[in-house]
Image (cartoon, rainbow, N blue to C red; front, side, top):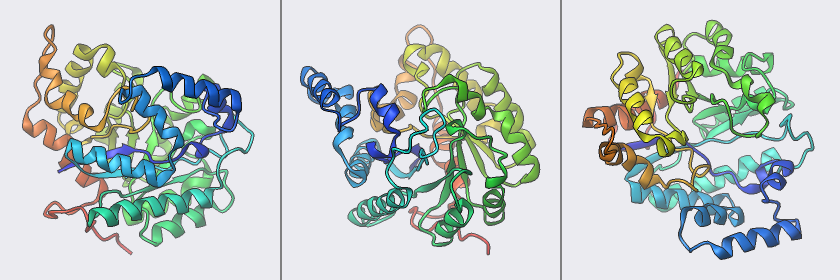
Length: 347
């Protein structure tokens, strides 16, 4: 059973207007709307970029349905859509995103719709947390108590450090009740402003883990092959028993596949580290490059076909990455045949 620990279903109106305009995605601007239509018009229907651009017109439920459709095609049983609170994005200070409570309601409605249509749990959402949001502690913990959300997503490059005092009660709750936390840990990404990328560095999480050593934490993206951040993550893992990272959205998989997969083989055969790596795709952020099916097939088929540097993963490697480790991270019972019964949190 493949579990995708990193994906998204937020709609375009959840992203700051300044960022949308930068990438010609302001659908309320007539000039950008025209340019958007022209780009789509010259692309062949079904190509990955054309498909990715098509998400601009979908609401959350529509995006969630597309995700589950691709999951079915790829053999992915369960995914964890991650909310991101972008209202306080320091690179785009204008308040131009959909109201947070509306985003939460839309996320839950989308998850409920696809889970009901599937007749079982397919999506387990994580709620976003930004320490600058008023009453963020009560808001996040309240939704976790409702058992509608299964984890927390933190995005420091919006303009804050992980050890911000505004997050400490949330982390304390998550540690006590074994609620998983996922954070952006890549030297890049939204908001597209290099001045904020260092806030996501793994060393900024060390004070958090010193304070909450049992916290279940995913330093997502594993940065890039051979970087100092990646080395730091691997050095940190033996120190904290519940520290993980995921393999979502590393474009080097396509540009330098020999180097990328040789490194991943080493990582997935290294004691301790091999038990802490999680499968994730960052769908639909990278949908212009890959689908859910093609992403997993790069690991199961594509890597061994790199004629100048073939890499062959064993079935046990893939099982650890896509099932065993994600189950442990999410607190799912090992004996559970379906993901509809997550391990009950302690009270």
